[in-house]
Length: 215
Image (cartoon, rainbow, N blue to C red; front, side, top):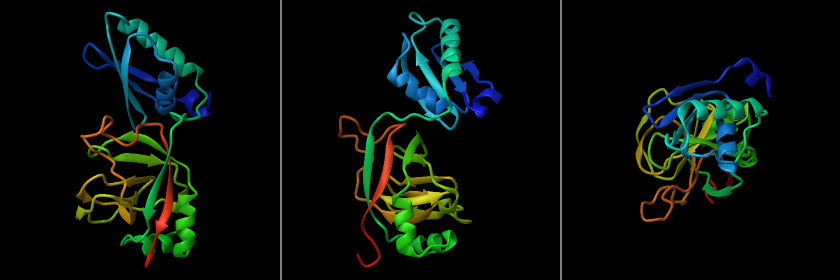
């Protein structure tokens, strides 16, 4: 187990009578483990930042036994976040209003900044904010951008943006305070699809440049 995992004990607490909340730095890895090897009675696991909410059938998995099983799974983890095995390449036109600012802050010219961002293997840490919005983790320090002091009232759907340690794409027009570097035509949320959300926690994502300023 990683040093992080050794020094931070997991907290597993009930949420109603059919869910447990696991708070641990290993929450993402636990999700991957449960996806690959489900525990009896567990129906769904919903990730957040260092949190995993495990929904279960108490008639199949008594909460005490499930708590013990989850603690045992956590004890066996290595501290390396696992993915679901899916890899998504997201086409991006890099022409966002904050692109030049972000490149300058990173100490790069715009083409090198775009190449650096497209070279980063990102991973969906969890979903939130609005349907289809994924918090993408994996940015190196030089590509992490501070949020705007004053959020924009309207961020267009498809905007590719950076905010703190995260990258993300706005599925629909909303207010937003992240730095917009580009846009994608990918549809991230569509209730008409069998699976309305394009991605899920654990998916690996890369940005692929399909256009830029003047492109």
